Length: 178
Image (tube, rainbow, N blue to C red):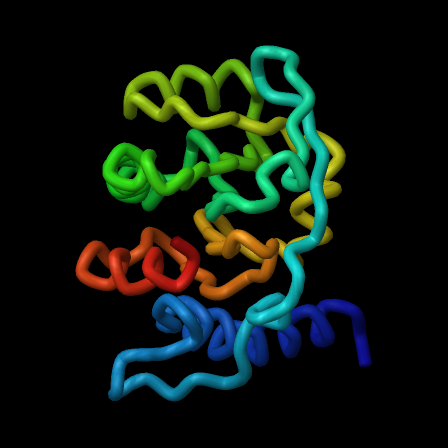
């Protein structure tokens, strides 16, 4: 089979999977009218350990936050849905600061300068991690941005949000890790 035909076939097969994946809601549940095929392989598993440098040059590791609830958020400044997501994340972080909630913003396929400017616009004061070699992206099986992994105090992924977390479900998901 010619290479072009194989690529076309792969796209035809991938589109329904991508669509269904985009319909998945937090924690592996879906809208009742949505058919869900599978779930994120990291759900209820220990979160992959990452250690990256922030846009301001500090080294940050997920292991630095053992004992605290953490959201690992993959995003980029060119990502339109991230504009909806950042205010939700900032509000959640402020609301749950006393419980130790932290967000680690992993920058995917973007420059540190663009990402820092974008984050400043949205008052994102959490660590912005540069993943230039896609080490974290690969460890978390990255497919698209934004995607957030909600990690409990023991370091286990308890929920995954594909796209901005629905504001009406965010408190339910946060309860799983706080």
